[in-house]
Length: 189
Image 1 (cartoon, one colour):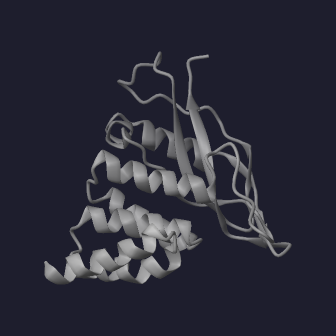
Image 2 (cartoon, rainbow, N blue to C red; image 1 turned 45 degrees about the vertical axis):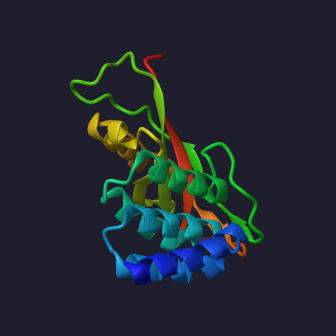
């Protein structure tokens, strides 16, 4: 407990200075010290995202979402993802990087038992290969992520994204496997 608390305290010094890259190894140590800590995993996810370590951020986000984080932890991780990887409407400019573009996302299918009058939007973090194929999908969490998951909206959104068509992204003018946030709208219209 003392080692965990000390490591988190050092990490928080760097976080308060917005030195995300310097905070990452301390949060990694905290996660190693207490693998069950959703707080440490959420902070590690946030720092990786804000440091531009997209693959590490996504790997930690996937682990976090399987750990049952609190609404605040999930929302904090989701906000960091949106701030650094996009919110589904726009993405931050990164020199030499053009994110993948969603050319067509089919309307999601309401699952059996879902109320088709419910209108909502689910943000899906999507990894797109150099050939435009979807490799991976991860929910961008918010305060109600559990409801999105248990009600079937997450699975339906993932299905819609996987059936979508994408133009690959580029890095230094070369096709690259990159992440993009894709909004999936549930609407009865």
